[in-house]
Length: 293
Image (cartoon, rainbow, N blue to C red):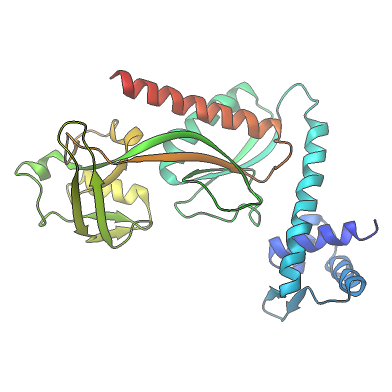
């Protein structure tokens, strides 16, 4: 089918954001990319992209058509990876993203084992507390808190953790009250409401307006360690931070689920599979250790 190349090129134009960027990624000239797009639009009899000197945007028809073109590229990539997986050793580039907290405490320790075991695996770590677009950034694996509604991504629940409402012990020497500032991450709402449960003491609700906000987990943690306020920290980090204690020791917040997401719907590349398995194993060990303490 002669249109397949044009469809593949069109998906790259959309995902890279411009014809010139697509040309760089595919290693061809801009004129070749432009000709593929022109031929495709003439063959279909519709306009797929509205272009100006500064930006491009999809038409309604182009948006619908892109979904199929994206799947075409994913299937082609999976076919190549299936053939490569006949190799006895995992190898190649791997772009992986996670939040700062998960990257530092979970992903890096897990993948360090893989890097040592399989030196031909070449990972690229993209740490961000905001969800970046997996397709446009050509991400092979994303580790995230909570499930995704993206039907183009395959997802697997690989672990869980609890956030811990905590502060420095010196700040809580007289108990908790509204005078102690709340330190919030950007993903939290300005109005903070935490419902905490207990097997023996019943539930309680902690409400507070966020006084200090940051887009960085590292900044929030640093503020807590410097006795500035109260906030939430994942349990797998909380247990390793000296001086920080639970605000309500007999109560706990709910469980958060960790998911692995990737764009490979039919065949998961070997390198991606072993990374997921290693991260899941680390999370399992961490949860089992917590249960026995």
